[in-house]
Length: 269
Image (cartoon, rainbow, N blue to C red; front, side):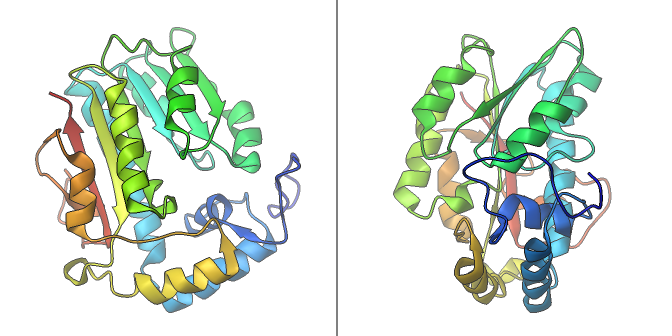
C-alpha cells in the first residue's frame, strides 16, 4: 500500500470507478484500503446518516465478543465466516485461534479486493487452518461444498453472517440461504448474525434515505429489515442470551448506546 488510497491487486471484476461496500466499510472504520470514490460516497452517506460509523465499529466489536463467546463458552473450533469484508485487526481467525490455536476458519467473500488481501493477510496458527473461498452468498450450496474441504461438518460449526444478508434483497431468498447453510451443519452449531434495521426504536429511520442514496451510487445494493423479519432468520434455532438486540449491546461489558443494527447468536438444537 503506497499511499493509502490505491489497494493492490486486480481482477476483471474490480471496478475502481464505483464505490464498493467492502472498501467504504473499511473507510468508515479508519482503514486505508479504499479509493477516492469510496471516500466520497462514504462521506455522503455519513453526512446523511452520521451514526453509520458507529454502526461499523459496533458491528466489528460484536464480531470480537461473539467469536470469543462461542470459542470460550461453547467450545466451538470451526468457523464459516460468510461475507468476510476487508481484513483489519482482530479478524475471526485471530480471535478464535487466540482462544484455541487449533481452530479452523473458512472465510467466504466474492470481492476481488477482499480476495487479494485475505490471501495475503489471513494466515493463522500452525496448529489451526485458515482458508479462503471466493464465492457468492447467493450460492450457499457451493459455499458448503467448498467449505467441507476444510471444515468437518460432522462437528459443530459457527456460521458467521455479519452484515451480509442485507445484500440479499429478496427476503425469501435470504431466509433460504440461512436454512441451506444451517442444514449442512450438525446439532450444536451456531448462527452468528448482524443485520441493519429501519426500526425506529433503534434509531433506524435514517437508514432508508441513506440506503436509497447508496443503491443509486454504489454497489452492491443493500436493504434494511424490521426486527421481526431479522428474528425469522433464526427460525428453528435457540437464541442465546440476551437474544436479538442492538449489536452494540450484545454481551457488552458496559452500557453502550444502541445502534440500528441487530445482532444475535443462536444454537442449532
